[in-house]
Amino acid sequence: MVNPFQFLQEVRAEGNKVTWPTRRETLITTGLVILMVLFASLFFVVVDSALRFGVGLMIGIGH
Image 1 (cartoon, rainbow, N blue to C red):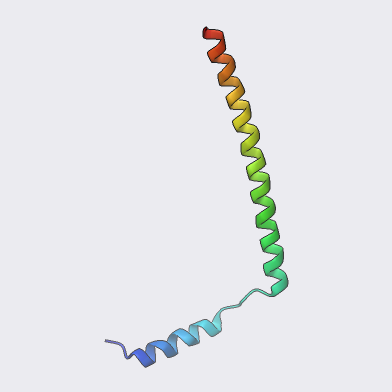
Image 2: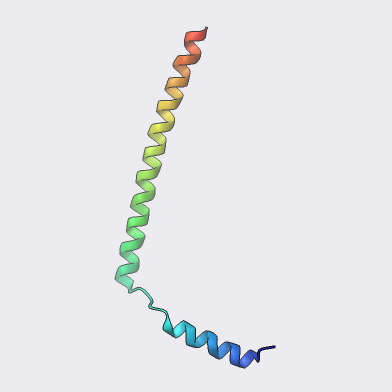
């Protein structure tokens, strides 16, 4: 069994070893994530529309 006080000291020591990003790095990364989400959503809308159109043509041919 580990002493809770010792455990908290070790957690704090490990937290001090972390290299935290700067505000600028965080803003740039956030902007890039938002941009990628927009591109991915646009891509999937286009693919979904094309597939819906293609399936509609195939179903229409059968009738």
